[in-house]
Length: 377
Image: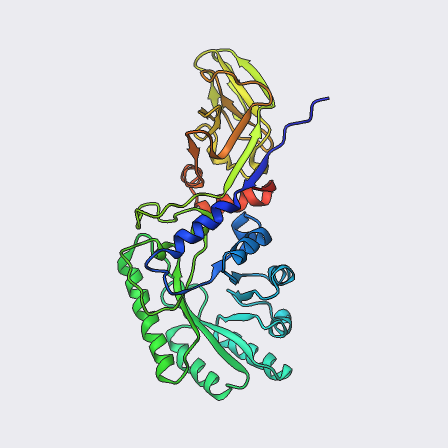
């Protein structure tokens, strides 16, 4: 009895090491503390395998979101240092303080809450002041900074201002606005220093700015690479450092479930969006949007089979996708299909998929990671 073909996500941890080494070699990263962002299951790549690989290669400071992530990491890497990038729910603050985690102070109100919890526990809370330098997402506004400084100065026994940070909204394609944000960040960090508050870590640069050699930011001592360590340059319209070589970690593989001959004029898949111009041969692949393949790839995406590109024909369905293999020799049930990744000489990248699906590689990686069995190489 033949086993039903499966779709799996392969993660190359050796490439993770290569990518982090490449990022650390950048001028914008050298001599700075690396806070590796591994939130949201390491962007779909698997939280613990990624964290362990990074730890084995000298990185033990991680940016996360959830307390569940913190618990899992500390169970496997007890000495890991963790920054909760958007704070935590008020009900989790006590546990976070007891675990000596670093917590993002995302607003003046939240800073008061952290202080109240620390006083109740008679402990000091490690905070990273989140400053809104111009993205208008989380963070203290410029008008709130002086109040925050006063709170910190009056409560040094309960507040350890370990870090100060912000986030750049468009560092890959808008140098002018990035410089505006950097100026706000630098001015506000200097204000903290002038008041005698000198955070151990100051950080604003993530992957986009680190990979943009038009940006010169030399007043931070830490960086937060995220998508770049997973092998993806987020700066689609500006390549930045031409010498850096990043390798996507993900390969999504399936295999041909069935071969079907289609007559000229026949329709393929739902809603009759694809009609055969000639007699053709299609391969049915047992993977669809349930496996993270964007439905927007319908009639315009492609897979790899026998190192040849095979166009998606018709609508991508929940559990199957049809591809045109008319001109590809040797295709049969069981033939290997690459949905994302490299074959012998060709490649389908998360960037390509994202552009066709009108989204970004982050979302593509997350969806592949949520939807498929992970196998680590």
